[in-house]
Every structure is written in C-alpha cells, then in structure tokens.
Image 1: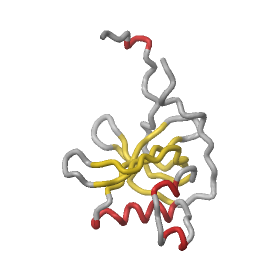
Image 2: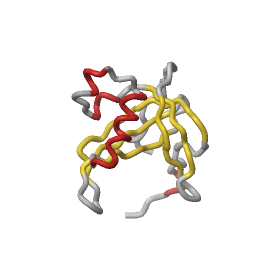
Image 3: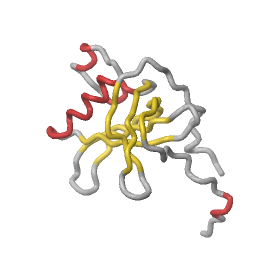
Image 4: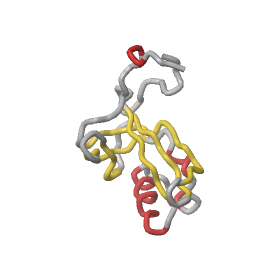
Length: 129
C-alpha cells in the first residue's frame, strides 16, 4: 500500500528547551520494555498550543524516584502517594524542564509543581488525515 505523505501534517511536538507548564493528557499503563521486559507506563503531556512530549517511567527500584517526583509535582495527597496508580496523574498540570535528547529530540528532565492550569486543545492523535 502506498501513502501520499505530502498530505500528512508535520508532527506537533515540543521542540524548544526550557521550562514549560504542561498538562498530562494521556496515560498508557502496563507497557513492557522490549529490551528487558521491564514494566512501566508512559504519559503524554501537552501545552496550550497542543504540542506534545512523552515520557516513560520504568517500574524498577532504581527508577521509582522519577515516579515519586511526578506524583509530587502533581501534588497528590499523602493518602494517594501510599496507593499510587499511574492514572492518578491524568489531567494534572506540571512544570517540566525540557532538554535536548540528541540532535533532533527533546525529553523531560525534571517535574515540578505549579499553580497554573493548562488546557490543551482536543487530542488529535486518532484523527484521520
């Protein structure tokens, strides 16, 4: 099957380093690393313009601190921290420090709490082109 890629819009991803307030718009639970078989979850964050960035959290002892930082940035109460599930972060706005990850890509290096609320446009991932 051939595709006319001239009709496909360019990706709408965050490609600017620095701090940004982003809303967690999607949580994909129960993902498994293809390399090591490690369980984890992936979140998609979006700014008010609808640009997105994704981050993956692996559920291993040495990386659990990243999940805790995310939960704290979402300002989850202690009662929820004790029974954390990835879906609890959905809809929360956090401040993210965006840094380069190679010559073309960017990643989130840090999560912080914010008092702001970001409302991105509706998700366009499944829209036909």
